[in-house]
Length: 468
Figure 1 (tube, rainbow, N blue to C red):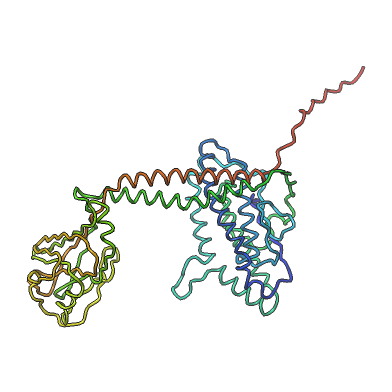
Figure 2: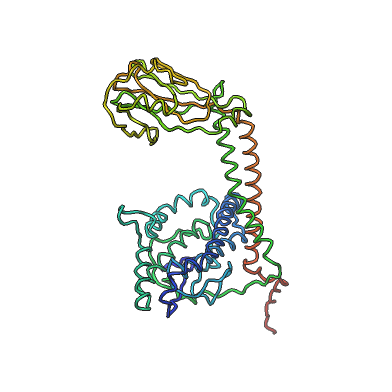
C-alpha cells in the first residue's frame, strides 16, 4: 500500500473512567482557549506560507513546525475529548511531539516540498474531502428531526456504553480514530504540510494501514535555552488585535460605501419595497425615535427622512407619517395590513382586525406631520423624538392598494471618517499579522528539527594499487 506521509496514531487506553467523559468539556476549557489562539495564528501563518511557496517555492521551516504542532495539540485534545474519548490522560500544553502520549501525529522526513502552483488550487482540490468530512462530523442536517452525524452518534452510543459497562466499544473507537485521521490528512494538505493528495478511504484503528505506531523513528528534540514567553505574548497580542482591526476595517469600508450612495442633499436611499393589500391602508407602526436632537444639534445635513411611494398603475397614492395614537384612532375598526418584517425586500404582513372598507379621505386629515399625494408621491420630514406610524393608501381611500415604497435618511458626509477608519484598520491588521508571524515563527523555531551537524567534509579514500 502506498505510504501516506502523515502518520496519525492512537493507543487504546484501558480502563477508562465511567463518568469522566461527562465533565471533560469543563476540563478542556483551557485547551479550547489556547487552541483558539493557536488556530487563528495557524490560519495567518498558512497564508504567509502560501505566499512563500508561490513566490519562492519554499515552505518556511518554522511555519511548518508551528502548523504541525498545532495539529498535534488539537489531535491530543480531540483524542482525550469529544473527537474520540479514547484516553483519560490529560493532554499536555505543548506543540512538540510527545512520544509516550496515546495520541500522536507525525510527518515523514522525506515529505516532498509543495509545487509553486499548489497554493492557488489546494482549497479547490480539497472540496470533495471537505464535504465528506463535514458530513461525517455532523455539521450537515440530513432531516429537520435528526441533525446528527456519524461522530455525534458514535460518541453518544460509546459514552452510554462506557457509563453502564465501564468498557469503550473497540469498533466505535476505531471508527472515530479513522474519521479523525481523515480530518487531519485534509488539514495537512490544506496547510501544505504535504503536497500529497489525501486518499479517499477511511483507515480505521490506532495504527496506519502500512505500518505500526513504532515504524517511524523518534527524532531527538533540539535543545533550546531561550524562553517562549516573548513568542507567546506576541502571538496572543496579534490574535487579540486581529478582531478589532477587522471590525475597524469593515466599518471604514461600510462608511465609504454609504458615503458613495449619498445624493446632493445628503440622502441615502434604500431599494424599493413593493406593497400590496386588499384593504384600504398599509402601515408600518410603532416606529420609536429617541435622542434625535443629539444628532441634529451637532451635525449638519442629518436627521431628514424622505419617503416616496409610486403606483405601478398610475393611480394616485397617498403616503403620510403621523403620531401612532392618531393613526390608531383613524383606522379603528378598519381592516389594514401592518408590515411586520422584510424578507429580502419582500414584506410580511399582520392583518389588523376590522371591516374591509373605504377610509375617509387620507389627505384631508389634520394630524399628519408630513404627507404627499400623487402617482409618484414624496414627503420629507425632519426627525423628532416620538412614536410614529407610516401609512400608504389610495388617494381616494378605497380598498386595494399597490405601491412601491422607498425610504431615504439624511446622513453627514462620511468619506473622511470612512477613509480614516479604513487606514487605521489596515495598519492595525498589518501590526496584528506581524505579531502573529513573529510569535508563530518563534514558537515554530523552538519546535523545529535540529539542523544537520556541521563538520569537516569527508576526505576521499585514495585508490589502492597493487605492488609489483
